[in-house]
Length: 339
Image (cartoon, rainbow, N blue to C red; front, side, top):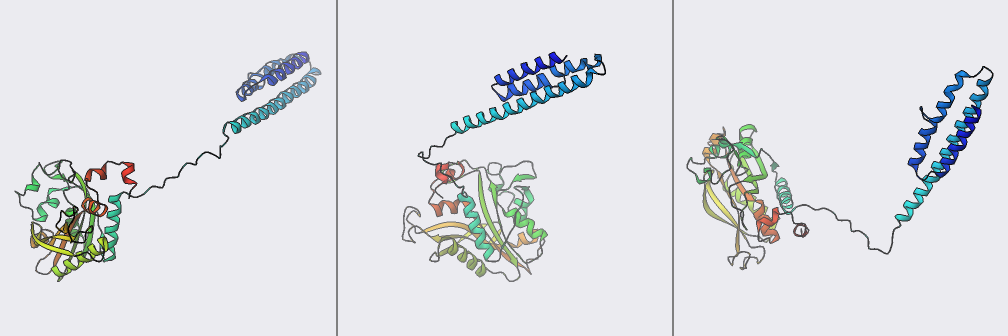
């Protein structure tokens, strides 16, 4: 048995010397020192030895095991160093090559406009309110005094989910929810996505963003509405920007108006951006209709308010001189890197 152990040692050391990879080393460890390895097979025969022979053969067996383990470890470290050297050689950095530019992300133009507008109104004392994009017909139309035959209710203009649920066509339902739940006075803006059945073209999109604002309290007047919007456009477009209020008709406000601002491109002289008129329409507004207040549980004899709404894409297109709304949703990296 002593001869078998010594022969096993010589054979193992020879194979270890010839090993070329770390996998070979692991296979040899299992082959010779594993639970079912060659050394174990030989030592199982110790039961047949006499009491005098067992200590001698046991000592030799341990010496063989130690020698094989030491040789395995030495060879393993050699192979690791070889692999490390090869990897370093393969990964040599050519310092003469141009470096890789680290690109920093930036905010989307729509996000920038939403943040700018929100900051302006928060600075004027407004808070930001949010609501679900799927809302009820009541919140989207009925509570806002929209007649049953109003064109916006038609299925050709609105995305209906059921007879009672729809994708909101405006962020006004957030105002309705706020009036029904919050204590007065109320002073909020409600930015968010809206949806209408529009065929995509240069100025229309079935999904767009809107920011609406509302103030409800005692003795709120049209004068306060005009001052608020004038401050808003000056902070967004510049201190020299002027506003013009034109009478209009909205079912949820009375009186109602559309607001024009002097063209920020030509200063009101007239240019292609404003189509030679010197003015650009940016939003609609008005005093909250008494029926809307009643629908939301507010007494119009005691309280009054004003509301306004502006399209975010419209502001972005004006501010950044974008001529096609579809560019804002195509995720073209070269386009977005301009902002």
